[in-house]
Length: 250
Ligand SMILES: C[S@@+](CC[C@H](N)C(=O)[O-])C[C@H]1O[C@@H](n2cnc3c(N)ncnc32)[C@H](O)[C@@H]1O
Image (cartoon, rainbow, N blue to C red; front, side, top):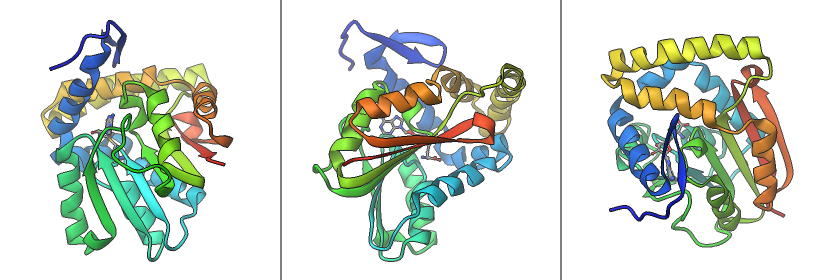
């Protein structure tokens, strides 16, 4: 049951009631969970792996750190973090249980279960104590969240003073010609690919539309500053198809 607040938001290019969005997003990721990892490689020609490695390069995890990976899905960021930081622990939090189930199977196969927790939860109301993590990551998750400022405020709350936020998200290409070529690829190739591989065109149509709706690099950096983070910086990946944003809680 949803509560009608009268506020609206985007679901891809559709305008919907704010209170409907989480249910629709949950539906998308429940549908794609079992094919999520395969589709990521197919859609990006494997490039998402390089972007995730770039995130970990900038993050530079240290031994013993506690990571919270929100919208962590099947655990791509958490696995990379643990591989680079001995004695570290990762908590993967996601609102779609199906995604976490796929991730937990990977953890068991890689004998990492004792260094990982899998928690169902919403980025806008995290089920964790104040100041309980050294690092907060969110990778290709934040554009799906209904109220991004609420998620950033929660990130700030659960980090300890001195803790770090890092966001990996699709972004905007600064050059209109490149943007046009990229749009041609994303709108014409990705939904049919979703149909062919995952039997689900609509979820992948949502995916490409949601990318276009997300704020550009500078606007998103401003939202991170507004949430109270300091020393906020970003780096473009693949000319701005994606971007990394970093901020510190001081
Ligand atoms: C595109 S997947 C990203 C998964 C993983 N982080 C990665 O980079 O491969 C987006 C994930 O965000 C989750 N998600 C969307 N909105 C959320 C919210 N409000 N709170 C928690 N998770 C959310 C979805 O369930 C989905 O698993």
